[in-house]
Amino acid sequence: MTIVVLIVSQLLVATGWASQEVDSFEMGMKAQTLMANKQYAQAVDVLTTAVNQDPMSSWLRGMLANSYYQLKKFADAKKQFELIAQMEKGNDLARFMISVLEPLAGLDESAVAAKDKGQRELRPYEIEQTYGSAVLYVLVADENKKVFKTGSGFVITKDGFAVTNHHVVVDGKYIEMRLPNGKQYPVAHVISYDAPRDLAVVQLDTSDPLPVVKMGDSDKVVLGEQAVAIGSPKGMEHTISDGLVSAWRDSGQGFKMIQISVPISHGSSGGPLFNMRGEVIGVTSAGLEDGQNLNFAIPINIVKEVLKKQGKVLLADLPSSKSQGEKPASQTKVTDAELIKDDSGKVACVNRKLGFAFNLTNDAWNMNESIEKEQYFLKCSVSALQVQLNSYAAEKGMTESAMVEVNAKYLLGNGFSQQQAFSETELNGNRAFVGVFDKEIEQDGRTLKVRSPMMLMLKQGQVYFFSLWYLEELESQISPYVTAIQKSFRLSGS
Image 1 (cartoon, rainbow, N blue to C red):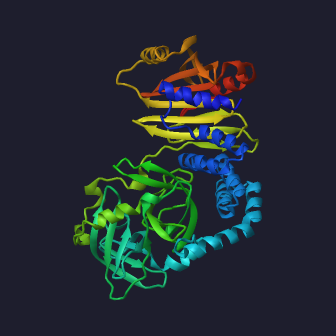
Image 2 (cartoon, helix red, strand yellow; image 1 turned 90 degrees about the vertical axis):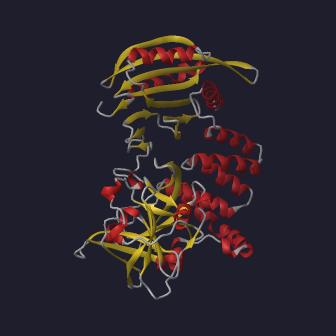
Image 3 (cartoon, rainbow, N blue to C red; image 1 turned 120 degrees about the vertical axis):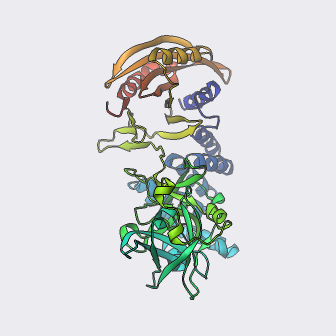
């Protein structure tokens, strides 16, 4: 039955309903075969690529950890189990394996450190002890010297260059920045700024040599790696938090931001995001409103670009947020779906930003989400079934009948056979059009038929194409689940 997902993934790519990239689930299945044949080094190569594509998959990381263990790379295995434990707080097996690997990994890490002490990974407290002294608490005041907002920042040169967010310092008439040792320095002027990318570099008025951070290379950030943030959320100075690099996201301003699971609250904006070598890889920005672990950082390499365009600007001359009309990068609209399991074990896929949800079976689902050419794609997979949602803006004036006609024509023109024509039905308060299509494919000398119940909706100028994919020969076994999943699909307000 596990061959089903491979077949469906190939079919979706061939017909244009999925990304042209190899599906991470397909790579996971390939890795399983390699591991069964004890080809663990090859499995590591495949799984590393798969994890970069789907960093939040504990299934992929579990296999990667096992492969490392078999290769006696205990530190690498322990790191993967630690990442799994962070993603799944109740995963007792991962925690048990961490304790088992602790002494073995210590030996492994000592050998690595002996080869290259400069690249040794630090623990969060070591990062704070080494570089926390350069992190700033930012106090922004009006013309009456009354503080009306706060933020975070960090020192990058001993003579007082400091980095923060543009939206932290803008509109401030007097700004002071305080180090953890209690010393406070006024901002003399702005060295450089970039409002669309929400960055500002300021000069502190100081004659003292200041502690500094070490800037890294954000181009080398790996999805799934651990990261540490230091800032002052809601005025609570020098707060340390850690998490994972979750994804790269389009900011909508012509650059990509680093999505992180590191908790970021208002007041942390402008602080440093460190990798586990103590290098700053980003400038933190407040999370999305109503988002769960949806937090972002601006890549440090953009700071390096901004520094190339230096020019003294007085605070009074810094364009205000009102005149700029910009939206802080932290508020950029980013989609994010979640797999949520309730106390009874029931699983649902929910995307609050796009306003849809549907139920799934009580299995370990693998999820991939992407936006390509202004179209939203979501795939949820288990061994014998794949669920997909494709959503995009309808052409101006498109009617429901035109939507159905265009999609039916596309399917029939790409080798699908129609088992049930699209017909109108009512689903959770919305009008939907449901049909069933088949496609025959060749796999290992066999002719197999893939079946796909499909559903179309048009709501508020947005098309929703919801489909399920499985082998027709398995229909009697999974039909009840397919029907239940399809009937559970709902949009906001329905």
